[in-house]
Length: 220
Image 1 (cartoon, rainbow, N blue to C red):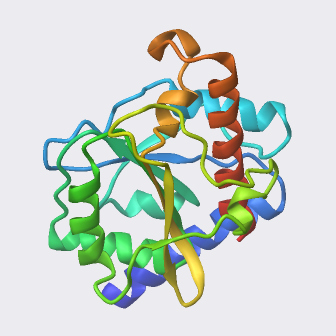
Image 2 (image 1 turned 180 degrees about the horizontal axis):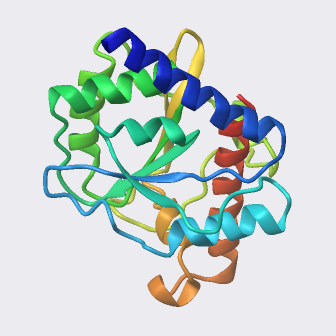
């Protein structure tokens, strides 16, 4: 029964990727997790990023992202999922297994630290891939040059601790399955400028970097 269930989930994910290849509309997901962190932060960020990607013909994505729980079989319906928040994340064993299978099967996870997420995310992702490490990506990595050029890596959107922004990757069999953006706060930048009093320039930079992430995840 477990083998049949897993095959069914892999088939579902395969057809999600097929729809991307055929340039039909796909849907992306916002990852809902337990532990007390505000997974729902920046409610306007993904819709704004989707609108930007669709307008600039970077992708063809349904206007509203879906909310999907880490342990749900529905996770396999989405080629790209986004995780954000300020606080704690706790994944139980079933959620760890489900997320691992999703990423191994071809799914892509983007994690954006909205400040305060770092220690918890690093602890939980280690459960998912205990033998792999988050590696800081060089500025030459294609994710920084996919559609828009970021020769110095991630843009700095919000100040937290005065640190430079960093982009970390988790690889499985040579494929980037998770991209972690730290000390940049892209999600805040994707929101309408009035929400966080961002300049239009920062807003555009954040959207362009987000478009690069979407484009890279869909093409790899």
